[in-house]
Image 1 (cartoon, rainbow, N blue to C red):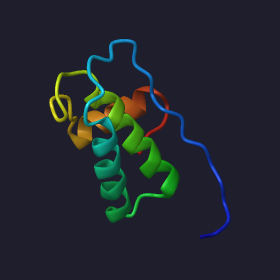
Image 2 (cartoon, rainbow, N blue to C red):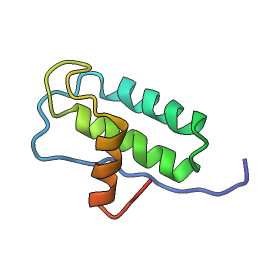
Image 3 (cartoon, rainbow, N blue to C red):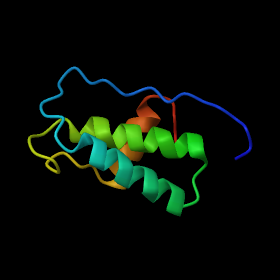
Length: 81
C-alpha cells in the first residue's frame, strides 16, 4: 500500500525431511502475523521460518512449530520478531 518493496528469502535448512504442507503453513503463519499486527517484513519472516521448521518432520503438520519456537529460530538468525 505504501509503495515499499522488500524481499524475504526462504530459510533453507540442510535437514529438510518433507516439504508437504510448507506452503499451507507459510500462509497460516502469514495470516497470523497480519492479525497480530506485525509489520509486513516481520510477518513474512515469521511465515518463512514456520515453513522451514515444518519441513523438519514427516507430514503436512508434523513439524509445525509453536510461536515461541519460530521466534527463537528467528532470534538465532538475528531477526527477532
